[in-house]
Each structure stands twice: as structure tokens, then as C-alpha cells.
Amino acid sequence: MKPKIIAAAAVAAVVATFASGALAQFESTDTSPLGVGITIFRPSGTELKDLNDNWLGATLQLHAKRDELGRPTALFSLGWFAADKTGGRASFVPVGFTMVKRFGVGETCWYVSGGLDVFFAHFEGVGLDPASFQYAWMSDNGTKFGYNLAFGREFGAGWFVEAKRDSIAKLSLKSGGSVDFSGWSITIGSRLAY
Image (cartoon, rainbow, N blue to C red; front, side, top):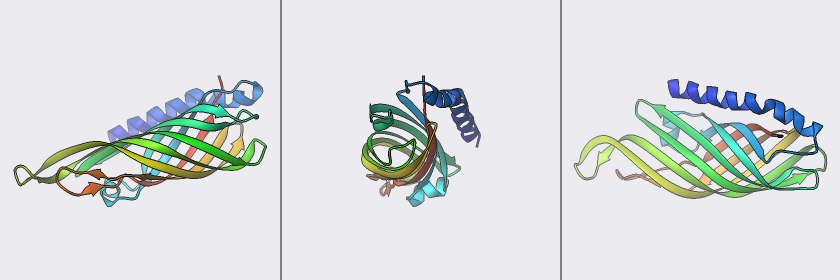
């Protein structure tokens, strides 16, 4: 429980640090190349749901391309999600490239997005060790590829909310079987200013 509190405090500190910059975005013609968000991730796989139904994570965006209004149309993203329980723990870091298509020309509009991701996944739990044929604490890591599809709403002053589906190749375990890191997420975030 303590790592979750520390992670939540760190995310809150980052958001609080940059909140004033988000408001300043529309007082200046310059906009930041960065965006931040707080995300609730709901895994699809039963192994990850057993650890926690809802994971809290942080996301950081680097805006690679903008439209004529200064809104990002292409971005790189980095996230961090983790959960732990007595029976195991898991974490993953998604790194992705996403394209955004907006429906509307004002600050407030709907959008859809899609992109490709690389996921650095880690899973620990009790499993049957194939070498000793005994149950033991086992750790598995892997780099997996996937894609994301999202829809969202921008509210002006840089704020947005989106629902996203991440589909990820399963992480194969040494003890046999696999872990599905795919899932749904909801992000509340801000496009920042200098």
C-alpha cells in the first residue's frame, strides 16, 4: 500500500507543479511541448485484476506536431503503472507514438486518436518452476508491442479527458501460461505552457 501512496503523491506533486503553466498557455501564444495526465487503468487479464481492478498511473506527453491552433496532432507518450499484492506484483511502462484527429475548430472539441506502443512489462508471482518442479516466487520481464485507440474531449485551457483501449501482446511466463497487459483506461490531463 505504501508504494501506491508514494506514487499518488508524486503524481499530485507533478500536476500541482505544472497546473499554473496550463492556465498560462492561453495567455501566451507559446504553448509547451509537454502534457501530463493522471490515468486509471483497468486491466483485461485475470492475473492483473487479481492484483488490483484499477491501477493509478501517470502519463507524460511530448507534442511532436501541432495544428494551426497550436493543438498537438502527433505526440510521443510515456506512462508508468504498477500494482502489488501478497500473491504477486506487476508493472509496465508504455512508450508510444499517437496521432490525434479532432472534430471541431475551437478549444472545446471531441477527438479520436490511435497509435503504436512498446510496453516494458514486469510480472512477479508464485508459479511452478519448470527446472525444479516446485512452486516458487518467479519473475518475468518482457518488451511487448501493441496499439492504442482512444476518444476524448478537450475542454479549453489545455484540459482534456479521454478513454483509451490498449491492446498488447501477452507476456509469456517461464512457469507456463501468459499474462495479458491489455486494458481500458481513463485519463484526465493538461496540455502545458512554458
